[in-house]
Length: 283
Image 1 (cartoon, helix red, strand yellow):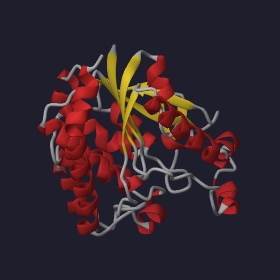
Image 2 (cartoon, one colour):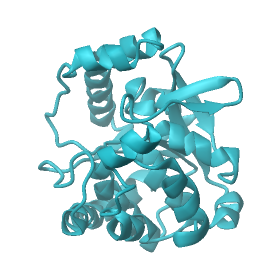
Image 3 (cartoon, one colour):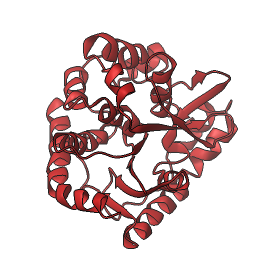
C-alpha cells in the first residue's frame, strides 16, 4: 500500500502548504509519492529536495520585486511572474534548488498541467527538474490569461488547476491508496463561476478547449472536494485544511502577510503531526 500526498494550488495561499511541508520535513514524515498542482507543484518540489524553509525564504525576499506577480511583468513578458526570474535565476543562482538531492530522493513527484489544446489534465512524473523538467513546474503554475502557455515538446500547457485542482482520484488510480490531502481553502468553500468571462474569452480565443475547461472548472472543483470528503469519511484520506481563509490570496507583495500564511501552515502541521504519522502507519 503506497502512501501519497496531494497538494492543492492557490497562488500565494501556497505559503500555508509550505509551512505544513516544512513541519513534515523537520519531523521526518515521508511519502512514497506526491503530486502538486500549480503552487502545490512550485512549493511542493522542495519536499523532494528536502529544503526546509526555502519556499517561504525566497518568496519573502522577492515578493516586492517588480518582476514578481505584477502587471508590469505581465505587460512586459506575458507572464505575471517573470519566467526567467522564477524558474531560472532563483533556482539556479539566487536561492539554489538542490537538483541532485531531488534526483536521489526515491519519492516520486508529479506535476499536474492542463493541455491547452484539449483542456484535459496531464499528470507528469518529474524525475529531474533541470532543463525541461522545470518547465513542467512552470506550466503547472501558468495561470490562464495571466501567463503564456508553456511549450514542451509538441504540446502546449497551462495551469493544472484548470483541469484537476485536487488530483486524489488520479493518485488512487496509479496505486496510492493511503493519501494525505492538503487543501488551501477552508472547509465549506465552494468555487463559484469565474468572473470577467468576456476578457477571458478574448484572451483564450486560440484555445477553445482550455476556455471551456476554465468555464466548467467550478463544477469539477466542487465535485473533487466532495470526493475528497467522502474518502475522508471512509478512512482512506487524511485532510488538512485551514480553518479560516489563508491571509495571502492570489499574488501578494507584503512579506509579513506571506509569513502569517506560512505560520498558519506550520501551526496546522504541528497540530496534525501525530495523527498524520498514525494514519500513514495504519496500512
